Length: 275
Image (cartoon, rainbow, N blue to C red; front, side, top):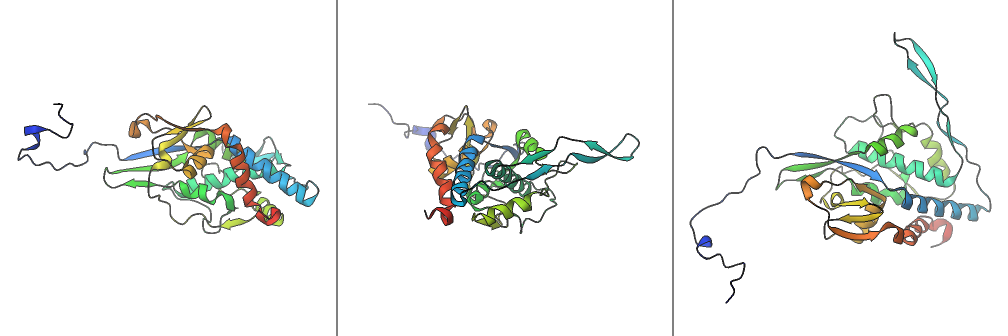
C-alpha cells in the first residue's frame, strides 16, 4: 500500500513547537519598474480619433507644443543662458491621447513613490477610461512576509516623460504646461475626464505585480482575472523573479486583444456614439 503525502508518521507526532517568523536579513522593499506597452494604447487612440473625426465630420485643428524650442540652462560658471532643443508639436488626436495617457501614468507612479511631489494630486485631470489602470498600481504591503512593493518609473517611461516636458531638471514629475490645453480639448469633443488621482496609494493584493509582458505575450503567476490581464497588457510591471520566481503561466497574446481594446475605447465615447 502506497503512503500518501499526508502521512508523516512519527515526524508529525512530536512535541516540537514551531513559531515561523520573517528572517531579519530578508529584503524588505522591492521596486517594481512600470512600463507601457504601446500597441494597445495605439489601438485605443486610433479608435478615439476616428470616432471624434466622424462625429465632427472633420479633423479638429490640433497644434499643441509639448516641448519648447529653447530651455534655460546654466554654463560652467553659473551664468543663465538658453540652449536650443528640438521642438515637439502634436497635431493628431491619437498622438495627443497617447501623450496624455503617459503623463497620467507618470502622475500616479509619482503619487505612490513615497517622495515629495510638486503637483496638485487632488485636482489632477485625466481621461476617465484610464481610471481603472491608474488605480491598479500602488504600494503593496505584505504584513505576513514583511515586504513592500513600490511602483517606480522604468527608464523607458522616464524618457517618455522627459520628452513630454513632464519632468523638471531634478527628474521629478511635473504636470507639463500643455496638459491643461489637451484636457480642455478632450472635454470639448465630449470625452469624460476625472479630477483627482485615486485617493489610496496602496493596493490590496500583489497580483498586478505578478503579471508582465514578454515578446507580446502576457505571462505571470496563476489566478489573474481577465481585467488584470487586460490592464497588464497595457501597463505592466517588469519581472520580480527574485520575489515571485519564474513566471510560468501564459495568459494571452496581446495581438488577439485588439477588438477588446477598441471596444473599451468606444465605450468611453458613449456620449458620442450612444453605445
